[in-house]
Image (cartoon, rainbow, N blue to C red):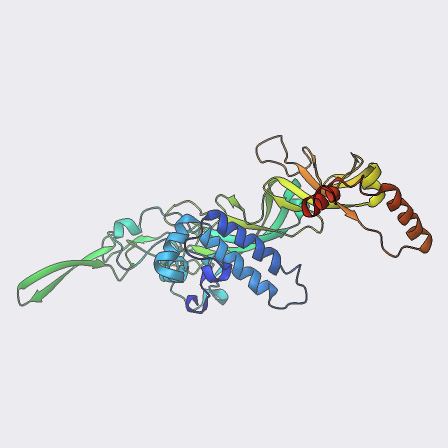
Length: 383
């Protein structure tokens, strides 16, 4: 129930004035922190992760965010007319005990107050939503993923007519196919005529004498569908893939809705991503930093060798052009920026310590320009 859900802004730890970038930044931080793969021992991690994704799904969409800001969860809850995350709601075993007029009325925007003309117009089916998690490399290079989800389709047996095979729906005898009947009422002010929905056909203008046994006269069945989703190279965490026509069936000849597949990307143990650039830290030895060296740099496509100059300081950054993430609809890629971290040796032997002391005596302060400058600022030129 919507009443039991936490406020989406509270879930992401932001306020209502947050802009698109702030929302995305908060989502990325929390998604990485609470990803089930990162917290395998936390039984609540998956639930928390789903809550974060649901909040981002709404607040990252301008239309849904507007409805949520105005009406709260009711504005995006399909059970209350909001059309949010209801694509996978269960209809119950064998469809027993449900009023399909009400169910499909909510799918296609129906309701008791609709005119017969509007009710019988072609209406597009409801959009559905699914979620998949992929690896950092799969996001960088693209991949194919199989997903399964539930959707409403036209009944194969009756082709959506609702009538048993070999028969057809008949024009409603009560309303003559109009879907509405006139009612005359006597009031203190005289006789008044009003129009109401025909009870015999529910406003559809047709009745089914021999209902299809497969769909029980509704014309629709709910199935579990499996399909392959092509994930494009360069997709980022929180983005979506839209599969047109893979949502719920339309009504009265209307088109199928779409399927929105939101994508979560698992964190990488080495690389961090920002846009289409990737970043990593590379440890080097004191000797490599001092003398310069040819070192191995990890990339998404394997190791490459890179020559660092002598006297390289810790935190120095170097760039490998075109070794980042594929830019969609382009032949270009982002860059790989790596930061070298000079590792101070530990557990030195007596001989190694003596060698370093002798080295320090030979250097004095002349080889340490930053240290010399720092000392002058504090103690003056003569110190």
